[in-house]
Amino acid sequence: MSEQLKEICDERSKQTRRRLDKHSDTIDALKVCSVKLTEMVEIHNERLKDHESRLDDLERRPSSILSKVADALISAIVAGLVCLIL
Image (tube, rainbow, N blue to C red):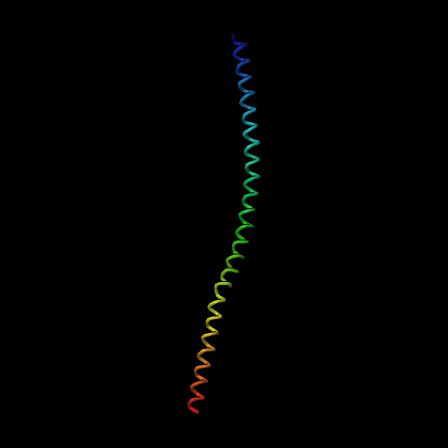
C-alpha cells in the first residue's frame, strides 16, 4: 500500500509541477504583454498631446481672424468719421 501511495504522491507532484511551469510561462508572457502595452500607451499619449496642441491652434485661429476683422472695421469707421469731419 505504501508503495502505491508514494506513486500517487509522485504523480500528483509531477502534475502540480507541470501546472506551475505552465503558470510561470503564462506569467512571463503577461509581463511581456504588459511592457508592450505600456509602451503603446506612452506612444498614444504623446500623439494625443500633439493632437491637443494642434487642435488648440485651430481653435484659436477663428478668434484671431475675427479680432483682425473687428479691428479693420473699427479702423474703417474711424477713417470714415475723420473724412466726414474734414
